[in-house]
Amino acid sequence: MTKTIMVSNQKGGVGKTTTTLELGAIYARKGKRVLIIDLDGQVNISMYVNAKYDDKNIPTIRDVLLEIKEIMNHLEAEAEKEDDMQDDIITRSIQTTGEGFDIIAGHRNLSNALAEFSDTTDVFLLKELISCMEDYDYILIDSAPARSPLLNMGYVAADYCLILTEADKASQDGVKQVVTDIKLLKKNKMSDISILGIVLNKNEDLKNQEEAYKDLCAFGKTNHCMPFTTIISKAAGATTAKNMYKSIHAYRDTKGVDKRSIQGILNDFENLADEIEQRILKIER
Ligand SMILES: Nc1ncnc2c1ncn2[C@@H]1O[C@H](COP(=O)(O)OP(=O)(O)O)[C@@H](O)[C@H]1O
Ligand SMILES: [Mg+2]
Image (cartoon, rainbow, N blue to C red; front, side, top):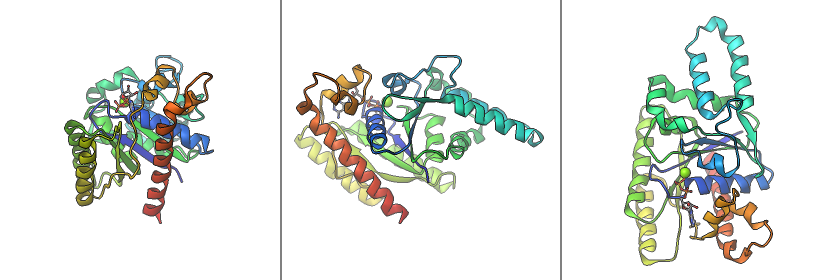
């Protein structure tokens, strides 16, 4: 069965996009069928994998969600024809990438989500889309650094949530906000999402980071969202790779790259990918 994972924290710059990209690349390399959905108006992940996000002929996630909204608002008599239309736009929106996973690209206007997706039923649009996707082992959702209707759409649609953070207070505050938002949706029976855990990113073995990890453990214990044992190291290669439109894994395989400087962060992401699978197994057992 498809497992859908939302990568979240409304604080920007904590590593959501980087982690989504690396996990996608790792699972795809392991032979899993992976789809990434870019739910961010900054379209960063779409850019990094050279997906088209401004080509009129290729629907973005915004086009797909608007189409599903249109269809859901129509009369049931038209249902069959409209199912075909929905399947067609979904098929056309899926782009293959050099990383081995597929992507539905983001769109700049997603930043306008408050205006476009403000009806109460819109929160179910992404869930409806994902219910049509049977061919994937993993669907990873990269989310925007903002509290918008898109975030709730993600929490309603996904089976699991991965919360990214850095050691600073503002990022940790973002972690707490994610947990609060999810708790409210669950209380209102709108979401079945399980929080897989918290990922501490950009580690440099500093004292404040050790303390941050302890704080996250204490928070995780009372809120059922323990940090992962794997902590992701800070490595300049994370940014260099993206400047070359590659995951760190694809960057490693590029000629002339100093592999030693990125081996640590590659191992970290691989360990994280394993830990995620173990936690999912434990939850589903
Ligand atoms: N582990 C890391 N080490 C070094 N730089 C990182 C690491 N993770 C992310 N970055 C860099 O930090 C910036 C923000 O990361 P990004 O993944 O775009 O965050 P978000 O999606 O949460 O806004 C990017 O320039 C990215 O390359
Ligand atoms: Mg991002």
